[in-house]
Image (cartoon, rainbow, N blue to C red; front, side, top):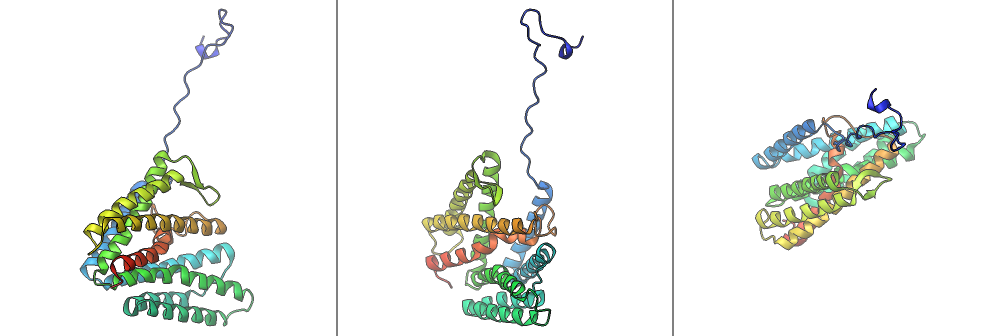
Length: 297
């Protein structure tokens, strides 16, 4: 008779123990890791080539990311909430905001943003008045969220050492995201904001802070003229904070919309907006801290 079907033992009065339970499955990442790494390497190569081969070409990269990001955002708004965001004036104004920031600094970016908001309001007037206020409000939000925040990357790029400032900005954001993911995946227990993003943990945040502070100190000493290690530590702390808040902010938007990703353009990553969620709110933080530490020019 098979041991597992045998009755209680006469000596103990208990059924013999069955085979040991299989070990629990290992944690697995929720995305295709190979695709994510491949796409990440490809995007990194594109960014570095545009940044260091011909600096103004990087404006094309920023503008393209802004237009695609606005398209993703407006498409999700329409699909999930039936919000009709005027995409044409937003896209044209978004490109103008980035270019104006590069050519004329903060004044140019603010002026282009104001004209974009005005054009968005006027464009929507040629459609039905129903839900006008809702659609225009969403359009103004999109104008601030994507092109205006992206214009701070153009402001960094316009400095004499602009390519290095942008490189530090991207490097620290990626390091903060990667550190949070790696530490949270391996050691994460305490949830950071379970109602917004169940995958985020306090241990992951600690990892983001640690790695961003270390890489920030090294970056300021080696890549930025007149930079010091302690400035890099503060820069890293600011990046870890803003990147985490940016990620949580987009998670809140996606939860409200009832979707997992903003798009599917980047295999293993989702959409462009799923990659910009940490970068966009971090750009003004890095621009401001670098301007305070070593000057805006």
